[in-house]
Amino acid sequence: MVATPILHHLHILTLLLICSCSMHASANTTNSTVPCLPDQASALLHLKHSFTHANLQSWRDGEDCCHWEGVACDAASGRVISLNLSSIVAVIRRVDPALLNLTSLKSLSLTTTRISEGLSSLSKLPSLSSLELHGSSSWDPVGPELSSVGDIRQLTSLRLERYDFSRSQPSWIGNLTGLVYLRMKSCSFTGTVPDQIGTLAKLTLLDFENCNYTGQPVPSWIGNLNRLTTLSIQGCRHSGSIPSAIANLTRLEVLRLGNNSLVVYSNREV
Ligand SMILES: *[C@@H]1O[C@H](CO)[C@@H](O)[C@H](O)[C@H]1NC(C)=O
Ligand SMILES: *[C@@H]1O[C@H](CO)[C@@H](O)[C@H](O)[C@H]1NC(C)=O
Ligand SMILES: *[C@@H]1O[C@H](CO)[C@@H](O)[C@H](O)[C@H]1NC(C)=O
Ligand SMILES: *[C@@H]1O[C@H](CO)[C@@H](O)[C@H](O)[C@H]1NC(C)=O
Ligand SMILES: *[C@@H]1O[C@H](CO)[C@@H](O)[C@H](O)[C@H]1NC(C)=O
Ligand SMILES: *[C@@H]1O[C@H](CO)[C@@H](O)[C@H](O)[C@H]1NC(C)=O
Ligand SMILES: *[C@@H]1O[C@H](CO)[C@@H](O)[C@H](O)[C@H]1NC(C)=O
Ligand SMILES: *[C@@H]1O[C@H](CO)[C@@H](O)[C@H](O)[C@H]1NC(C)=O
Image (cartoon, rainbow, N blue to C red; front, side):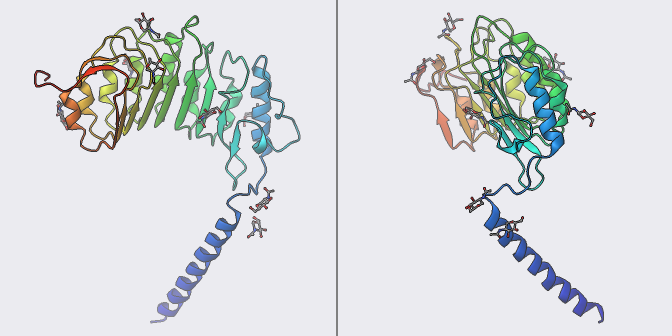
């Protein structure tokens, strides 16, 4: 009996707190209130010095690193959550261990043509869920080096752009069993598309836009990926018929098959 009014007051207090918090949040959503923490800035500056030819002019000691080019912070904590260096001119030969100090990093985007060291160390970043890697030319294929990306088990989103996998199939993608989004853009294959992708049961998005699978049919394992809501194989130089396995994808909302040499579904396809 005594507890009831107290609980009642607590309830009102909680409501008031929720209201004031949400008003506070909505009025402040566009502002980054906490500036970059010093340890985050120090890790970024260390990283900058590990790059060659980096034109990172906004990365200057003494200035709020949350406003540096390619950097995004959590406004409440001042910790770096996203680093996008894919459009920044820099030669990155290895992943410097200083990057591992950015323990709140969720999203990382790099142009990696010549990286051969340290990619697997990214598995030590506890919050990293999204990785975007850009290759840039076929004269410097990185297939074998990229295989250590398969060690970054915590990834839910992977995007690989402009890689030439004609020397080595990226079968290691099958180790990333938590992937929900897999995008490969303008990649080149000569062997078959790795079957291991057909075992990634959590995938909801699979996009192979403008990849080169010259002359190959669409793999029938596509029918196993029954959580897919988006499937794009457009511009992939696929040939043959559209596999009936696609009928298994009952959650599909977006299907892009254009710009291939596919023939319309035929009953001969099993
Ligand atoms: C935004 O947040 C700051 C401190 O975090 C506070 O002083 C300020 O009053 C808030 N602005 C609005 C419009 O609520
Ligand atoms: C905070 O947000 C307000 C309203 O959106 C804006 O006028 C102000 O310039 C922002 N301040 C900073 C430091 O970004
Ligand atoms: C990374 O963190 C470790 C341990 O907290 C610290 O000793 C080291 O100086 C940091 N490195 C950089 C480049 O900030
Ligand atoms: C990184 O930046 C590039 C170029 O500005 C952009 O196309 C890409 O979508 C960005 N990636 C992420 C994960 O924000
Ligand atoms: C990772 O993938 C490779 C290539 O498919 C495979 O040989 C290896 O056994 C996998 N490792 C684990 C731990 O699953
Ligand atoms: C596509 O792959 C085939 C076979 O490897 C190759 O001959 C062709 O040049 C590639 N085309 C493009 C545009 O990369
Ligand atoms: C359809 O999905 C089921 C599991 O949901 C699977 O056992 C079956 O092999 C799939 N069929 C095709 C044609 O992929
Ligand atoms: C069709 O696919 C080819 C090869 O991937 C690509 O180069 C071309 O730009 C695509 N065309 C259109 C209209 O998307």
